Length: 563
Image 1: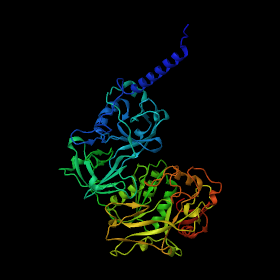
Image 2: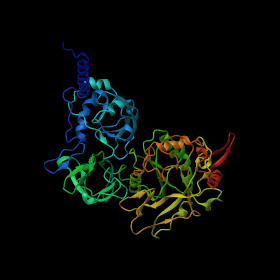
Image 3: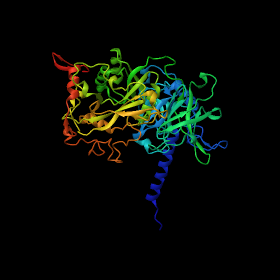
């Protein structure tokens, strides 16, 4: 008698049923019917029979049309989505979407194609296009699926699933590793910022292999690329009749290979007039620029100090802060400090941000000091001064017409100085023990001397051929870099390094990089002797100087002006 294969047959039947059910659940998000295939005019490559172009450019109008049907009834916002490192997703509202009050941009969710959701937090408004940005995390259940589809941004995920009648296919997530993300119009050309074209420092595609593309489809206009360095590309203006023609025109980069084939880089960048119109701002002699992330507790000390010695304007490139920095900037501006925040949400783009600043700030700044929020320039010649002077920094600037376009200043790197938490009196008071050897350098650059390529490395720029740079002696000026702070502050550096070409510390690659803390490794675990590390020389010079300048006695004790 033959035995019935009961167990094996049952197991096979269950597996088939589960696979079939999973496929049905994936399709449910798309209002029934077949799982959508990706069409070339929406996302990924298919070769055009007319011009051999791989169409990577997103047609945002199609997205806005698909989601507008949802927005009117279900409180959704049409967006484009980008997959960032660490499973983070950046959502950018459509250029066609009118923005409401900030309160209305709260309580959104990302709704994924397998019905999973995650909170979508409002991040800020892009300064040069006025679009809202949100961030959410990709749920683990979505990470196992391929391909990754763009989520919907909604307040009513249940209604979305039950009421959506859109038959348009969802689009794949754009990848941050290959994207045109920002553009800036100048009087002479357009500066376009693109990730994933020039992969390594010092190795760049020649401009002859590239074209800038304005607009979509058959109406797109192509112009020559005149410069290609790092993530910065300069393009000639398109020949347009009126400013209205290009007020909201998509711009991207086209890459050609040796066979004449080409691809268009996916883009969320737009060609539009400078934000703020044609208003003319009085030019400041010295400005300070830095990229910031959650530095609210440090900002007052930095601004008050530098303003007292001669910085007239501060330009902060905010890399997606979610602390109280906006409120602190408002307070400082009410006190008379001149501060501008540029919302720069793009990760690992420090060099590109400084390039943007060098071009963007030309009309409002003559000299630009490029320093971080934990770096303080001072001259030993100031040590006997009873009070600060706004001429102090100017005394370091070269005389006009002498051919010097940049000065560089060496850094003294300070250690934790036995601190286990952030000093409420400020970093200049709290840290006073440093490494003996001087490290790296920071710069103050004449903006008209910056090379058109806008190339910069570690806080200094390539200069035009007619200019030279000068390295200052430590007896003239130094930078106190409060680099290795108390562990709760220092460990934040493991989140992500802002430089494009610097490996994140969680990555074991390049362990001998000077950017890393010596001997720390690639995990955010506090060494047992951290408070005593990097302490070779006790140096109280700036501590005593700032105490004299900004300290005062109160009934509660001694306080600093920024407390």
